[in-house]
Image (cartoon, rainbow, N blue to C red):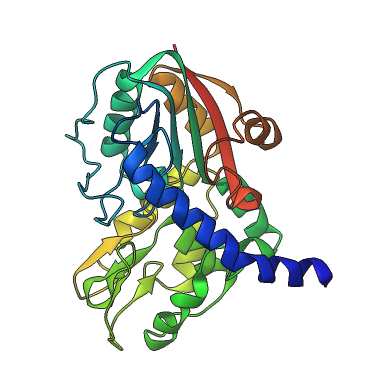
Length: 286
């Protein structure tokens, strides 16, 4: 109890420190050689020596960058020592991911490190099979902010739908953009899994390949809602599937051991965030 109280007491100071770092980085990074790249680091990511490719405009990200099948990173080849991407890949379709990997490799120096973090979809499926709801905890995946829209749209809050939301999430335009913190008050708005029958959801989730599961859910999304929509999560991979993709993209996967990766790359801002629910991959440019 004392430890929890101490953390709450120190939280305002931590927030103030983080803001000070972001503000200082805005100035220092104009003259500092940036050796590290964060792909999709969020609108408030600003740290010494880091570039950030992010689609949401903010004080710390004045030039939004969109990851697309045709995107070209605005950096010279072999510029970075290290690239990092945390919980971004699952938002990309296969074609876009291939382009991102190509550009990541192009802008990395020979032997440069690439740290990837995605949801642990293997563990998600295991938790589903064993009816372990703890992996799909509301705080872990920020479900508290979206569950009211499930109720308003007659979507049951059950472990199957929580799992489906992790593999394929959709949000209607009348809810606003969740990534830009632009929310609209609408009882018709929806942010959740494709609206399918429990029988169909269970049948799709019974598959063994996370990638195939996500694609089957994505294929069913258009017929599931009437209003305009966009995807939140739309892709997934097992440990072996993501390893194969990185290898094909010109990277050598060194390890997926979370402990080793966090210890070796502890200097990466936010490296420990969601570590209990994430799959970490450490790869190098071949």
